[in-house]
Image: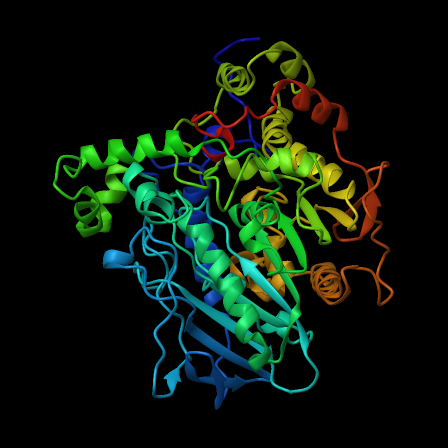
Length: 559
């Protein structure tokens, strides 16, 4: 091999060019990377196009009484919507880096027509969105026709625990609600505001814990659902949590958290299967202490008061390069989640687990160091496996044509998502509750144009029925009948699962429960069953790239 040879892309371009999103000038700032930046550059283009296609319909006010007061939402096109509902007190000032507290009741009718602010994050959080640390708000969509209690589907957004919100247009719940369910989305604290640990924060906690405030927000949102969703026609005994990417990981973590026991009854982890939480609390506390020192708070008489008074921008700058995400804190996450699953101690609820066929193309977006040559690729593989890199390179060789780029993305797909989903399916299916595993393989018109294939996040427009985000440049005329049929089928699979714990019914292709033969449902232009692609490669990576136990090091999959 010639070390300087370039890896071509499927378009005949270098992999270096493909590793950046088409038609956007967004470059990551120093210290940024991973899922957060990739989602930001995709949303810059896709969300803007999709928002242009949203129709404006006549609205009628609808009122609902909840535990904190009366809300005024709107009825529009057969759906009733309530937006910007506070589910906890604003976590600002002295409540920064504390568990979410009850919201203060209000006496007058509260308007619930607009999204609340999204969590502070790099950028504004999306086109037209307002970001604030006062971010603990949720949105609800329900069928306008009242009747019997309906299943509830609570979505947890992704974004690497650093970006995103429940208010992104992609997650609009109208189309799902039209199918007869109550849909809930919400925001939670992110990044340094959501996941900072510090010895003094741990000391002031009644649970000797710090660092998982964003996950505690998720628990608080689910507790709010249990108290109030019946007022919106939802059945609190049939709550399904579903999340994608970091949201899928959150689902996997809530499955092992004692704080979430009884708050949900089905779970769906999309591109976010269980994996090791790479940091124990003492290591994360040390990182928090270093941050406090860097911004001049460590030597103050009251370091926490100093930290809580510092502006978000200063904290975010000081946290660049730090691992901000879930931590094994001994309370919300008592121990390594893999151990809990391996021993069958997760919550006994049915699960759907899965990922997308070309997850790895997403990991090439926004890379600070693009992989453009064979030498780059080989170095990347050797950095990804502690031993046995030659075996991996033999199984995933860099080719002399477009196969070189495809091999790179297949390696990243298998290393970063597929092997975790397969193992998660094995662990979950060994329990009493049924488990169903899928592979999303449809290449949308939009991603035929970008060259990204069935990439990370590509299933979401189909699942939410918001196909403008799957269309090329938002033009619905670019969609095929197969796209519309797949979207309808996916919505029905997920909704049937929310209703009964079994996704089958209504004449759709049978989705077998995951078992020893490891049969998957393959979601494509035609829905079929099949096996894991490249299972021999997954076996190899399981042997050579097993996640280390929590030891204070950064999780490579989050870089």
